[in-house]
Length: 90
Image (cartoon, rainbow, N blue to C red; front, side):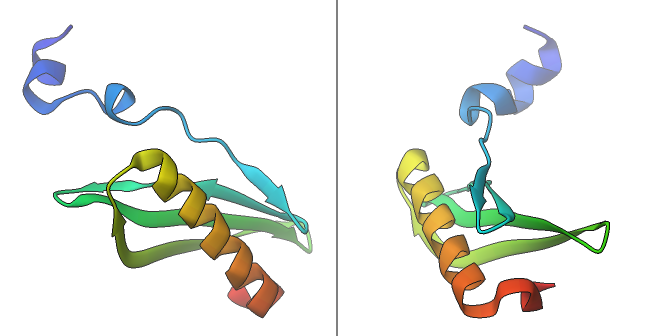
């Protein structure tokens, strides 16, 4: 282990690799953000529109203690936004 990773911690040991979910033609990638209280609900929503990859970053004030529960909540919130706004997200 390198000196820098011991000093600042290794991101890979803190959060396992994120997995994307496809939903109605959109790709949702949960990206919980580590906070003092737990993990902040965050996700990236992407869709190719007219040959161009469009991206929307969803960040909520909600914090959840468990990283897996935060990922599930982020996916659920992203699906809700897609259902409500569709391509108007971009």
